[in-house]
Structures are given as structure tokens and as C-alpha cells.
Image 1 (cartoon, rainbow, N blue to C red):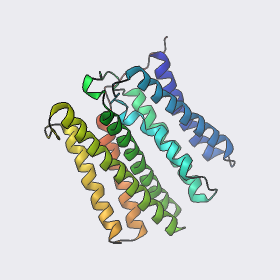
Image 2: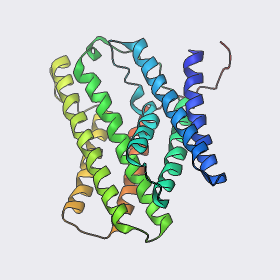
Image 3: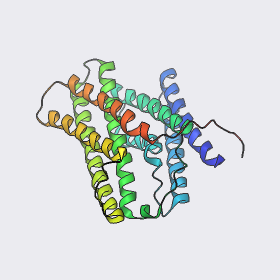
Length: 255
């Protein structure tokens, strides 16, 4: 357990270091090296927890897995040397580091996987949920960087905001349906409406459905899209990530 918590802490610390280096140093190499190393450690932590829980699904990773997955999305999509891309690297490093540290201080790893999570649909539900959260958060970071950059390259921000919101919505929809199939096959019920997690999950789906409707009807400016993306970031953090946290657990540094 000590090794697990240390790996998680090291990943969050490296994301924080990547942000600090991106601010203090004019070169990008050192910051991006710390970013990549933090991503690898975060993915290793997820794999470690999965290996310990297999074949059950470690549902407590619903938010813990978001920082490294968000980092992977940045690594895959933001390889340019433009100014707006550099801002996203710094913003993603800061968010991944802070979110990882909060998950480290408020762990929910006391959750005991039960037999009904030993199904492919529970694994798909968790994977699509994490991917959806990461895409929504990355869209929110692009929205925040738009306001910080002023009116520079509005078309770039418009394309990123639309594509990332649509990507997150697609993952969220797949997660919703795979979760319903898992629930139906495990308990005979498609939806358990007295579960607060289900209600907030559906509320998030309707929230981003409304945002996509505005995008598809081409209402509003790029600034409006950016504001909606930032609102979506705040929504996901408060409604979907905060509920995955457990009680405060002070760090104990002993093997």
C-alpha cells in the first residue's frame, strides 16, 4: 500500500513540476520530460490497482485515473509549438497535479469490488467514464486559455472546443449505455434512480447535450463556446469528480 500511495504522489508531483518548469524556464524540454514521466507513473499506478482488483473493476479509479488519461490526450493531440499549445501543456500540468494531489489526500480506495463487476460492461463503463471526464476537462482548459490569450487564433479554439466537447459527449454516452447494460445483466434493472451517482451522471449528459445543441446550431461566438467549456469543467469537477473522493486520510510515510 505504501508503494501505491508513493507512486500516485510521485505522479502528481511530477505534473506540478512540469507546470513550474513551463512557467520558469523558456525551454519546453524539461517541463515536457517531467510531464511524460508523470504520465507514465500515473498509468503505472492505474495498471497496478487494476492488477490487484482483477477480474473485478476498481470503481474507485473513476477520478484517480483522470489526470494521467488527461495527460495522454494532451500528448496525443498537442504536439505543435504554437503559443496556444504551450498554454495547454501548462494548464493541463497544473490541473493534473492538483487533481492527483486531491485524490491522494482524499482516497476512496476502501471500496471493495463485488462479484457483479467481473464483467466486460463494468470495465467499459469505467473506461468510458474516465475518458469522458478527461475530454470535458481538456475542453475547459482550452476555454480558459482562450480568455487568457484574448482573441488570438479564434478558429483554433473554436475547433478544439467543439471537437473535445463532442468527444467527451461520445465517451459519456458510451459509458452511460455500458453501465445500463451492466446494471440490467447484474441486477435486472437498467437504471437505479435512487442512486445519487446515477442522477448526477444523467444530469451531466443533459448539460453537455445542451452545450452541443448550441454548437451545432452555431449560436454564439467563440467566447461563448469558451465560457460554456469552462462551465463544463467546473461542473464535472464539482458534480462528477468530487463525489468520487473519500474522507481525508493523512499521509503516513512508513513501509
